[in-house]
Image (cartoon, rainbow, N blue to C red; front, side, top):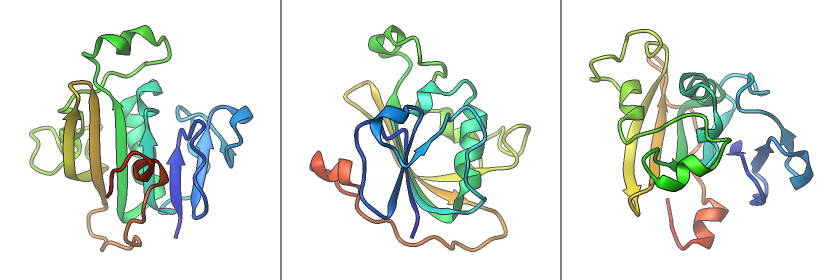
Length: 168
């Protein structure tokens, strides 16, 4: 099983998690920038956790394509990030992309623009969507790769969620 802790910051997860961050000083397994092609082959991860990192992307479509590319069909992906209307969002000069409760709907079957460029190549099934506390967007997703059966292992516990008393 391969699990990705993307933008891990100081929350280094134990094996089977692979911890990735832009800062080399924190001890991540992989130092990378989410704005560049991710250093893994296609269909590598069974699970991904992106906690307050994707808002630092210059291009939402690029990072979602990369997340989709490196995850296996049926992979479980959890995204947490600040909603762009939260006043504190604008205080951080490294927040480059603006996310709303509707952002991921563009990547789902049934959306009026799904199937149009640039949304035609990737798809996520939203299993859970929440705006917690009026500011934090939370999505639990399943990676869909049309014409391919799910291959990913079932999700395992996430150490950061466990520490907060949350479960899958």
